[in-house]
Length: 159
Image (cartoon, rainbow, N blue to C red; front, side, top):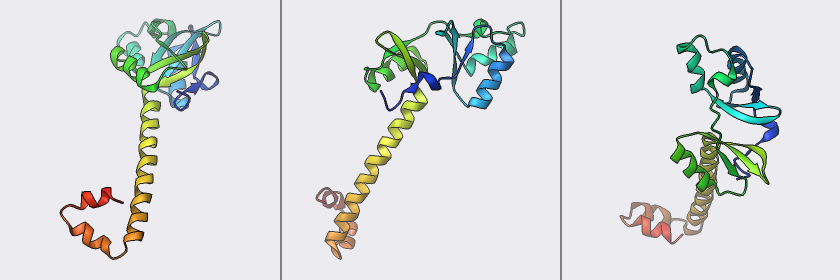
């Protein structure tokens, strides 16, 4: 979880009585997918970019507490990324708050998880290409013959 966790000190938040215009400015300047709504330094809601469409349809809505989702979903810092993904998919959400020993320690987003997976894949792919290059170096002139062979996948597995 540590690889995808946004530490609480870096989470963008606002107060319950924050005005919609101030929240919109936070979204623009901080380039985040959600803003956590706090009261007395404790999270009480979350606002996503989608939630920001509500005031367009209902111009009388002006404050964070009017558009926030107060049904916060928490996961434990010790949870596996796969289980966090399952919760997000099941609940159709993109952000969860993370707790450790009952204290909120951060936030995880689906974007952070995807970024982590892509970086992990790139790292594994890079290792594969290094192995491939080493195999090519060892095999020398046989390499071209292997690539023209219909069973080159079998040859690659031997590298």
